Amino acid sequence: MTAAPDRTIVQPESPFVWDEALIRRYDLSGPRYTSYPTAVEFTADYTAADMAEDVIRSRQSGRDLSLYTHLPFCAHLCYYCACNKVITKKRDKALPYVERVLQEAAIQSGLYGPERLVKQLHWGGGTPTFLPREVMQTLMAGYRDMFNLASDENRDFSVEIDPREVADDTLATLWELGFNRISLGVQDLNPVVQKAVNRIQPQAMTQAVLSEARRLGFGSINLDLIYGLPHQTPASFAETLEHVIEMSPDRLSVFSYAHLPSRFYPQTRIKGDTLPSPADKLTILHNTINRLLEAGYQYIGMDHFAKPDDSLAIAQREGRLHRNFQGYTTHSDCDLVSLGVSAIGQTEDAYFQNDHDLPGYEARMDAGELATIRGVRLGRDDRIRRWVIGQLICQFSLERGDFQRQFDEDFNRYFADELRRIRPMISDGLMRDSGDRLEVLAPGRLLIRAICQIFDAYRKEGASQRFSRII
Picture 1 (cartoon, one colour):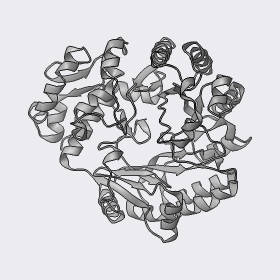
Picture 2 (cartoon, helix red, strand yellow):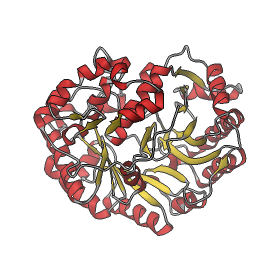
Picture 3 (cartoon, one colour):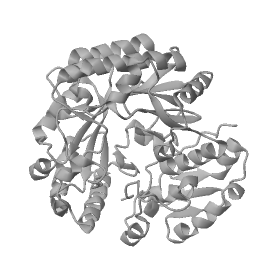
Picture 4 (cartoon, helix red, strand yellow):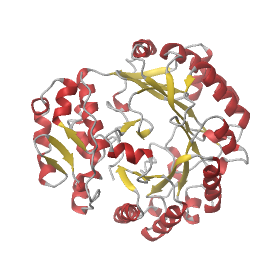
């Protein structure tokens, strides 16, 4: 396998075109492709013993590591949330959980190898800032004992933050522990919307956290927004967006709310007749994208935006952008060590997930076992398709020559059926095939998940309703 030559990817002058007819035609349900195969292909046939075997084999590669920790506790229930979480006011639950995470870390460090450099680290949840200061210190001290954590300026150590759960010393503590990036959950600044989703978070609170983070030196600060929430209108969300643009985050994630109360019980508290109509939801998204582009943000893909000088935008322009379970990332060459309940890890050849039930996870840790309960081992076709989908979803283009050098296969022969199936997309102006290069055009960028599904061997019969809608 030969590495592709370095290449700068030049984005088209117009990175985004809104075509409502095409959106309605291709707005089906589909994966977000944080992995390929996707998590619905994980099975219980893949065991903890398989995981250990794959991780030990990955150690021979010497690849750097990304370290993810799932911290499930939340003091408040947000009605829209579909994350794996534990709602509690009892802060004393944090330390026993962290002690078990450190037990798991000791096992996995021995498998992955304590000498390998951890250059990306992320705490997600739940609400990581639910943890008291001393528990955060305990967790990071344990990691420093077991893993080779990067300490240079190029490290990417990030944490998800709920501004409602930030004490006077929280940000300073995180900075002292080595974190240099944060992501703030905002969702919407409108008080009526906040009340409807049980997340009262005044703008001043968010601004105070953002200002303090900048003062301390945090960079690539991200804000999360959600469109499609109850009582949102195009006008109300536009007002929220103006306030957010004034805050000037480095990155923005604008997620679509998927109302699935039959699957996620907290959503039963949201009344369906308070949600914006499908037409209003499309208008909100259209207006939001246009306004962010006008404000100078670069459209990264799907629901992500970044300032042109942010590392994410630079990586995309240089063809170095990649995607994993943490979303878009500049770290392509890392195996993913994932710790905690429901966490998903990966090597070059496998994905694997921990027990999603907290008592089950705790029992496995108390027994001194790995918590892996399911996963999938990739075959050669999986690796080939993962590369193709990664090129399309991250760079919006694919060079046939790169594919040939990477896999010693003829692209046209290998994907003859897929090339036939994308002809309607080419005719509709979503894509262009120049012979040497397959390119996603501006009208297709918003529909990239539909394009990627063409190359998904597990979606040959169409999208599963287990996935959210594309738009």
